[in-house]
Amino acid sequence: MQDSLIETGPADAQPLAEIRLNTGLSIIIPTYKEVENIPHILNRLDALRQNYNLTLEVLFMDDDSQDGSVEAVAASGFDWARMIVRTKNRGLSWAVIDGFSAAQYPILVCMDCDLSHPPEKIPQMVLGLATDQQMMVGSRYVPGASTDDDWGFMRWLNSVVATMLARPLTSVRDPMSGFFAMRKADFDRAQDLNPVGYKIALELIVKCAFGNVGEVPIHFTDRVHGESKLTLKEQLKYIQHLRRLYLYRFANAMYLAQFLVVGASGVVVNLLVLSLLQLIGLPDALCLAGGIGVSVVTNFMLNRRFTFSYARDRNIAAQFAGFVGASAIGVAVSFGVSLILRESAFEGMSYGLQLAALCGIAAGMIFNYLGNRYFVFRKTHIRK
Ligand code: GDD
Ligand code: MN
Image (cartoon, rainbow, N blue to C red):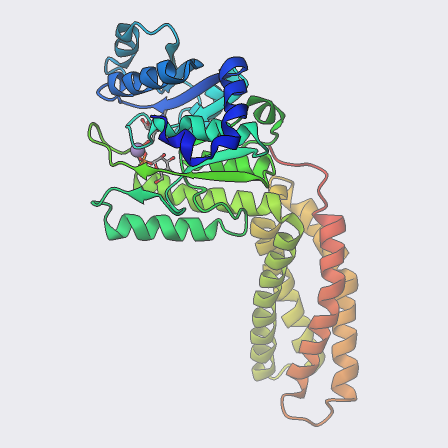
């Protein structure tokens, strides 16, 4: 049991001693139908408590399993363990957030109930917090870590891809881990917590803007009792969660990128429509106007739906009027530049009309983005 202490070196023994004497631990365990695992994890935690003379509370945050879990906690006779039964706002991440809110001690630990996460690593994690780390993660992807052999290829691949997608948000090797420790004070300061799905550590790293996250290697054991609740549906929520986190972290870059993608689609629409009108034999000016007119409508719909989706609850008619008004300068610029180039630089060239239109589009786009970002879809109301 003392191994984890020795790994960190004798110089670190002092902070742990302080923590042992002065600091209590709140261990939060989200549960759903874990009745078989509860006695085992409590015994492991009790051994740890005695070994290190820890002051701790264990909060099982249960989503109304009704499988005898409540009785199992009571039967343990440990007065430091209790179960909180939740009936609202269900789900793993919110269970953890509620547990962190209810916790009474300055250090918070989150772990699975299924014994995948070795409680014996907790002292080392707490030790990291006692130095300068803001969060300590029980990690499967640092040297010294391992997972049970029967981790299938698909589960491994899934985990690796998920971790890579989170890379721009954090350099932590295993931000998907459900085993981590942090300070209650940092949690209380966290704002805009809005997780969906399973990745609560990643949510906290991003929303608390943690730059200093330490990792402790763990051996990740496959669960023996009960089943995993990580269904495909839960995993797909990760994509939604990632989009939220990227928007939160890279707001401006994300708006611009989405606006440009929509703009690019507008270019295609514009050229298609104007070529079609040209085919019918309409005069050039009308072809240009038609291309612009149709692409304005498709651009508006796409920007409202995706780029500036926070504003899509607002009145569509008024918003479209604003969009057209704000884009008017851009449209005029696009039309003007196209016409002038058509009659000068691109005169007599094959596809001269299309080239002129492209240049006009580029000029108009600059005006369009500024008008939309800072006028039509300005961020006055933020959707809850
Ligand atoms: N309250 C509550 N509500 N608890 C839940 C819910 C829920 O909807 N779903 C799952 N839990 C509990 C489980 O009872 C377990 O204690 C813990 O949350 C993790 O659920 P598992 O079903 O064991 O998930 P897993 O082992 O597949 O996933 C674990 O590893 C992932 C990384 O591979 C979790 O730690 C994930 O957080 C982690 O991303
Ligand atoms: Mn598990």
